[in-house]
Amino acid sequence: QKKDKQRIVFVLGGPGSGKGTQCGRLVEEFHFDHFSAGDLLRAEVKSGSSTGVAIDRMIANGEIVPGDITIGLLAAAIGSSTAPGILIDGFPRKLDQAGAFEKDVSDFDFVLFFDCPEEVMEARLLKRGETSGRVDDNAESIRKRFATFVETSMPVIEYYEAKGKVRRMDATQTPDEVYAVVKEFF
Ligand code: UP5
Ligand code: MG
Image 1 (cartoon, rainbow, N blue to C red):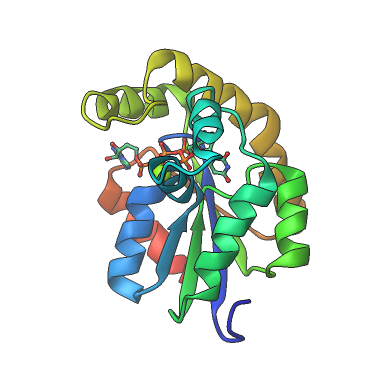
Image 2: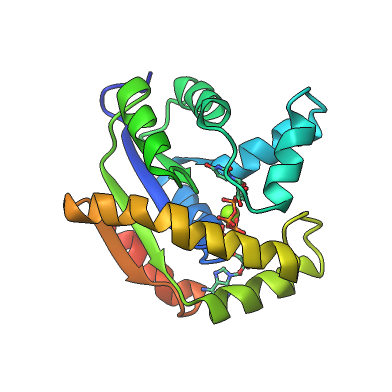
């Protein structure tokens, strides 16, 4: 369970919208903890655990891993955090997982949402794919990730938007320009 004064922010946006990049900058300036659900899942794959093979296949297919796995990894990370704030990057990307997290792990302050068109995200991901080694940075996986984002993850953002909990920004500018807007929310 998080400590009382810790604020939790969900950092959401399409694949390649710049979540990880901007979280890195917030960590530097504000000393928050940054937990990327995708990074935690990739670490699970690397660890060679029994679920790793199935997780790796789901990531390559742009599918959302079952919530109990992701929420378990996030809850453990949050439980060991003493930072003043916690950035949850790339989660929740499915409505029922959002509800389960709020019910079983913690409430949260707001959603930071990076709004970015697919053409821009695709160009970034294909470029990164030249060196990233990520199983999902190829044209075929990127297409599947976009479809999952539109069908399954955007409803989460719309749900929180209706509750007035979303801080939306234009993520197409340079990292410096985006960060100048992002930091104002903190
Ligand atoms: N870049 C960044 N900002 C830029 C800018 N302003 N201008 C120009 N270039 C910019 O950035 C992506 C690339 O763009 C980098 O090369 C960067 O330098 C450049 P990054 O900051 O990495 O963007 P990010 O939004 O973090 O992109 P990422 O690829 O990590 O997003 P995804 O949401 O696709 O990946 P994630 O790791 O969160 O999830 C991967 C998979 O894990 C999912 O598809 C799913 O299969 C699984 N998953 C779950 O099942 N459940 C979860 O809860 C989470 C993940
Ligand atoms: Mg990322």
